[in-house]
Amino acid sequence: MEAHLFAAFPRRSARMGTTRLRLFVDEQMARARSHGVSREYPMCQYLRVAMVLGPDFDVSTRTAWARELLDDPALGPETGIHVLHRQVFQTPNQVIPPEEAH
Image (spheres, rainbow, N blue to C red):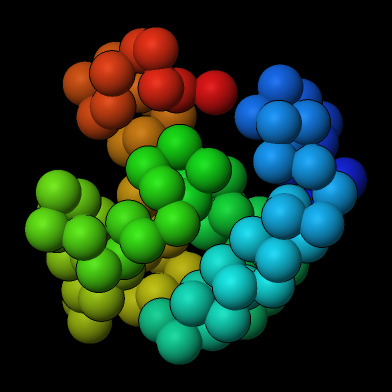
């Protein structure tokens, strides 16, 4: 998973360094599992969203809308992260200021 984030976010990953990135991945994977995400592809999507929105996006009041998608019982966790990922990466300037994206 670290390699995936290095490829997707090279500057941010380099700034974090290997140790912090590994810790980030471990913590975010645990958070993803707590929302019911278990398969590899949705897990990658969760990690990518966390890189953009921040490591606490699932509990922050600033991103409460993201938690609603993650925990929507009508969607289920893996569809919820897919919808959230699409929303974050198809309209990033509407979700987070451009200077913070990637």
